Length: 505
Image (cartoon, rainbow, N blue to C red; front, side, top):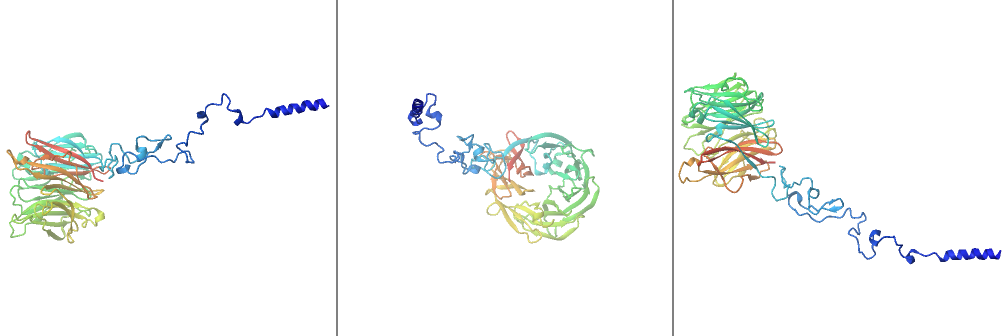
């Protein structure tokens, strides 16, 4: 028994003696390096030390760009690493490397809000065109542009919403002589049946001026009808200027014209009529304005505006020649061309060139929302807006224009408010040749925010003809506006119709 106890005790003592700790034993051969183990007692703190989530919330360094939507941006973490060069992940969803959006902010962070204007040539004109010979109209998928030449043909160009030309159609019009061409008037209209081209002309009948309407489809192709268009009125005096407007529902045409040739400056009466789209007379021609005796003045600067209640507003300047700017006369008419209320008159100032606009329902009822945009050439050159035309006519400044230069302007009421664009033109004394070409200009736009902006490409003004005293203006999608102007050169003689797509949020 004693022997057995002794043997077992010896075995137990041997097992206790062979037990050691890991600190004493050292690493086994295959334990790996300290790097593999993931830590080193002398490696110092890790980059994410002190972050309980392992560094996921560590803030990146500031980004390279600091203007516009990039202001305050810091480098975003992508796949666990901060961006070395900031992208939209750091700058945000509004950032663009090359700015394309028209949203009123600096998306590419270069210090300039919104992209530059896009200029493009639409067409070459056979000769210099006045506002009477060119017009535009916004349609569902773009813009229609009509230009009328002296060869009896109107060219209808369809453009997309970026103002790129898609198609041109030639339409026969009753303009057969240079004299007819120089005194005609044309205007694209959005009727209840679709687009239509109105124009008035002395069409070879030596003692008559007639108004015509050519219906078009959405692409600018002429619809079936009489050659030259449906006759709306026939006045027994040649070379008479006219103006036209559609009723609020687009189903009736209101045409007005003077009683004398535009070249004689002796017009003493303004006549108007209303027809339907088929030329059927709804309101027989009647006198709307007459020179008040014993004045020897003439009627100039006629403009017409459809009112939302079905009536019309007409403005005309009674120019006594010796008076600075003449007298601006305004009268409302109902749908039957009967006067509504009293006539109003104002002293507009020299070369005011008043243009009627409807400021929409937010400005009041159908008659209260009518307004005038005019030039002011006294003191600092400017454009002004006159509201409440029949209740005091309060004028307010719109914007200053370039001092000592003429603003050839166009107002347009849009879904975003009143838009105005103008050519700021100056006359350069001729050094030889015709002085018709001695004009230079820059293109400006005024958004509803009230900030004017020069959209001219480059630093130099572009060449203009004396007839280029107009701008066509159309609203485009996504805060863009479209404008059309004419540039001209004398040697060689060229006249180019230019499209301008610019941002006006």
